[in-house]
Length: 222
Image (cartoon, rainbow, N blue to C red; front, side):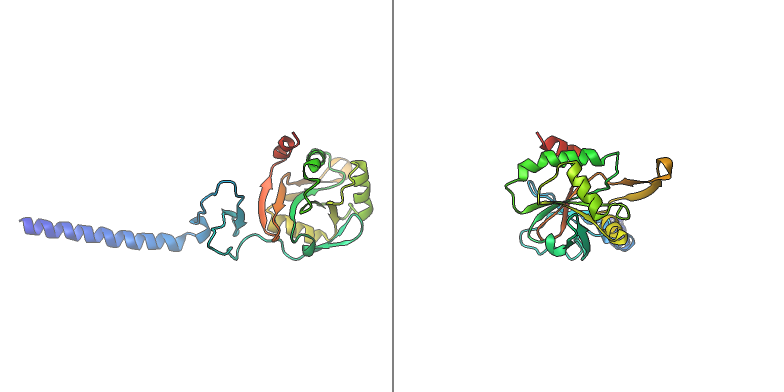
């Protein structure tokens, strides 16, 4: 009787081992690798972002960076001085990216003022720049961007305002930064835009590294 009991227990045990192995393999096949991926946070280090769902990724000291990190693709836009601005202007510098439009009456003025208050803290940091990209390039011409800078008394050379192809700008915003932009009908049939309020950080290798909420910039000014 004991022998039969032991054989029965072994049979049940073997069945469960086979079941869980098959079940776990089945789970691996069903779920996308990005949904089961996890990177351990590292104190004092900002993460990169990878994949379609923008998983945070903290670089391991002994490992190379993965191929699917969010990088800024090749692009060319125009500055407020009517000069070409492309990827090469982002290399070897940390860049804060802001999306805005000149006639914005919502979040844009607050972000602009916060950036103005923040600039004195980075005046001696030559490897950091600010890039403001209009989400209304059809209206925000080079001349309009110049007037916007004058309106806010922005004179810093390391703060660049960009306009250009709407497709290029919207592809950058939506596909690379996950920044939502929507066109809506505003007052008096004028176009209005709902757009992200976040400020984005790009590292010296033009890899998207972090986004910053406007409230954080409000704290930084102090």
